[in-house]
Length: 198
Image (cartoon, rainbow, N blue to C red; front, side):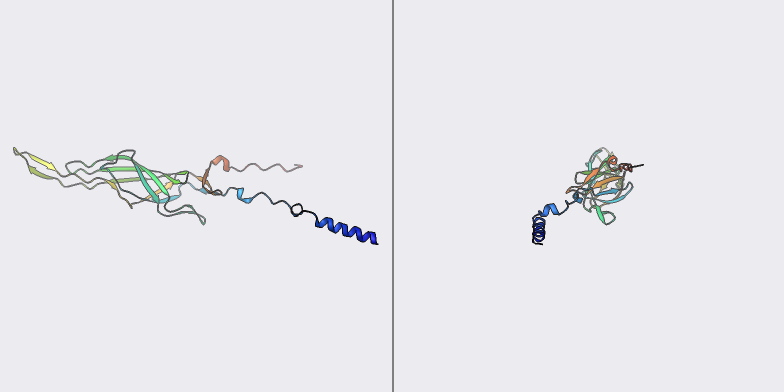
């Protein structure tokens, strides 16, 4: 009987001496390492606003146009593209206003939204035409009549609202401190492993 009690007491001490780390199962891999992927679908509309004026008085093909996202783009309850995110366009054609009241003309195309290090491709067109100016005459020396008064330059004004849309599906990874774009090939699910015995 005494030997039995001593053996039971020794067993209790041995159990108490087991380190807590050994008694507790190892935690699973951190869930934070799992990518948090959000797909921004093609043709998603994005409302932009011009942040500075561009005029045919000095613009030429290739002149950049700076804009911002006017309204946040939401996927579910996540603001995938926050309001205020920078966007860019580019002047395609620009004709300065000339004499005889000729008005200026300009067309521009939207290029991309810059979300951190990720350039999200967008499309959309801006066109502007200045008002035709009046033409006045003045009698110059020798009786010749000179015509003057230029037309108005075409302008994209600061604060002008512009519509655009995303040109392709864009998969974004929000799991890290900075958003990243995930190539489409990496989002394709791997084939399921074969079940044993089949």
